[in-house]
Length: 341
Picture 1 (cartoon, helix red, strand yellow):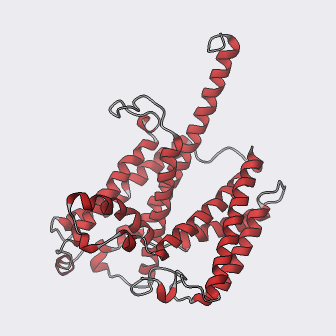
Picture 2: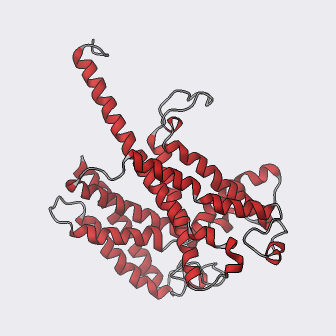
Picture 3: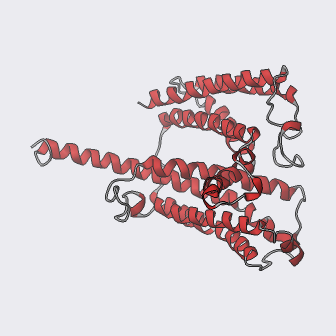
């Protein structure tokens, strides 16, 4: 099963890489849709690390994609060599965390607001899904997908040297507490601004957002705080069994992927957004006088890493519980105490 899983993800990653490589070559040959450079609606070219590229960069994309495909195919073979992992992991990190930028998180955060806006008659300044998800941002999702496929293949390949998992329930619990605590600083600043309190900023800075901008910030803060509450489910009973107040599902087991997929994805977009702010900080775009506008975001990679650790620990615990439940059921059947009586 382990080899099959590695092969399945490896072939999927190789197929993705070949398709994206063809796309890169097509951009280099003049096909429209190159997601960076002049056609990227990045106001000052500061969000993406590839903002300064041109469609000719598509040849580099094609070469990189070919290397990714070869690496992915190497992960489909049983081997005693770790060499494919030394390429797979850096490529996966590049696709998942480096190429995307903070707009990925903004798109996810504003999507629920765009969905409910028509119900309440909110105009949102005319913002639409096309504004939240332009092609350059959708392309970031495509890159993350390729990175995740490659990472899944690398994980399955690495299991032939599997040792005791580092992701213990104890570490998972600590990670959950960190993931809940870190965003609260950001939440405090945005809630304060919505109430007219210049926490971490000057009064002049605060006045610039009195046209409703800080209400949007308070929405994002509330969104983050709600995510922190849901993160607690990774260590609470209601994260494994639906509570009684959920009609139709009460008492049933929570499918692990229902928690793993959103938590894992959020850990990625939070980390990416935090890395964007760190790059801006290193570039000297901010001042200490306005620390509330940027310093809390610089801690987001810690939030994202903690959430990722908590998610993997949850997945490991649920897998162990499932194996234990299966073994108990089989034992009951064999002894005549279960359904096999």
